[in-house]
Image (cartoon, rainbow, N blue to C red; front, side, top):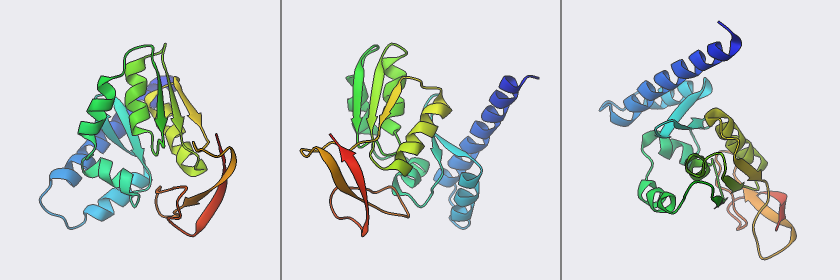
Length: 181
């Protein structure tokens, strides 16, 4: 067995285990122990399937967006409207990409001749988009680590340490300076 087939076998096993864990977390009537299971599974590579063969890695279960994906994404209707506009070969902008859920779904639809520009100024969150693009094998996602603003140059961006809620509005006391275009 060469390393590529070993990697794909490990990936398949990880996806199958993740599917079982996520199904249990979503549908099992007993709540006791679910938080421990989510923490343990996310520490070893839990992935959520957004749609067939499109995955998001769950690495920070305290993060509201990651937790929402595990327990059932509430934005499915909005995403469906967004995705209904996308055609193969298009260029799509995902502004404020967060984990890149919309970027991953769009990348699949635009195909290898299209491009998705994910705009996410927070370094920690942009790194998550990069990992999710690699997880899905999407080479058509360009991560733009900038804020989009009416101001050019550097802007103050507020971040949370425990989750990925970040904003140019004062949502926390932790500040970073990020480029804006």
